[in-house]
Length: 209
Image (tube, rainbow, N blue to C red; front, side):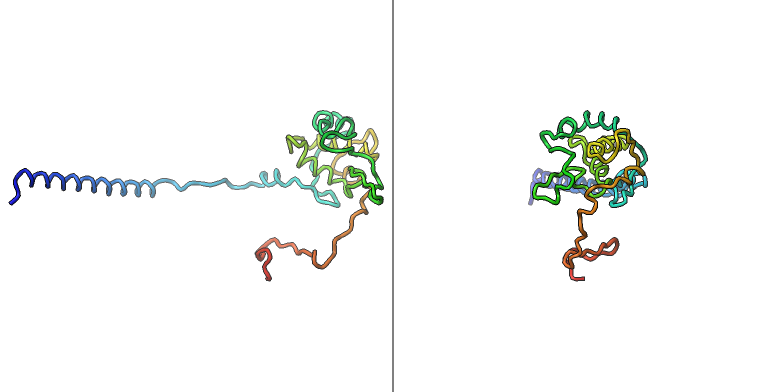
């Protein structure tokens, strides 16, 4: 026969266990209710046509499609070049600590002493605008305005004797520049290099389908 004190101790202990269990159940239920009532997290935001336009800045070759509105002169380009380009490419594009001269070398690709410049290498004029717009200056890419890119392009094309000193370039006039090396590239038509562009329901890479 249990003593009254021992029986009271057991009852008290059972009561504490019961209350603790009830608290845990209440907490679980509360968390579940809160989770159901809380709004679902939202990731990202809808993409607008304006957003896409800001990303779609590449210029197509060989017709320079995609050049934006704007314009810039050779004289304006000299100012842009001195402020944003000379530290790497040198004064007057003569060559600097990062890159060599940016003019001259026309025809050198037909020799064993090639000189890589805008005038000697680029087959299409839109390439210069595209590259400067996307990647220059190296420490602040895409910081130049379209007018500034047109201007510095005009300056560099002038140094390569492709436009006169009073030239003002815009989408039309830039695309009409004839590059000396426009016929210096060939189409890679090897069968093993053929690639068919796929834009929808594309098979996995390296699949046989």
